[in-house]
Length: 159
Image 1 (cartoon, one colour):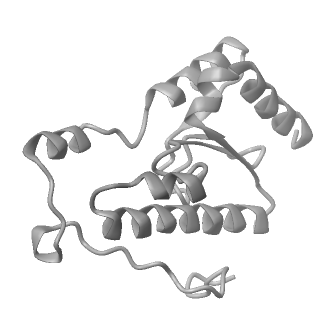
Image 2: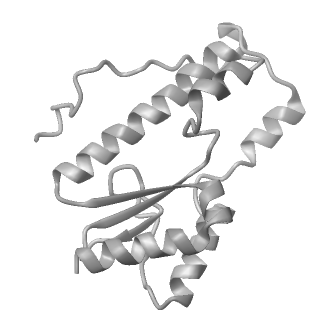
């Protein structure tokens, strides 16, 4: 598949720019809080990496050159791991979107586009023979052993 071909026929969701001209408002404190949210080396990601390291599993982190910037990678075994934040990637989206109170016209397309992009990335890797593992941040927190086991199973299957 060439770079110009899209893996899905559905149109890309358009996310409006978050600015006052588009009718989106926020407080200085909220703006500051949002600016502090990290995109890599999050606490759930660090927790999973530490557990894998303690289990003797070595890996590469945040490979920016790979599509979707996976959090953990084993190129040799064609395995990628993403640790997704429940809010940002739309966990239980049908129920959660109803609870959004402010700037709904921004947040709903934003999160729906994130979900769409996740599907596109999954499809891309799978079409190239890779194994894709996605964990919710709360799964890593609540069931770390299960997450580590899934990684070990994927690595042994592709070994």
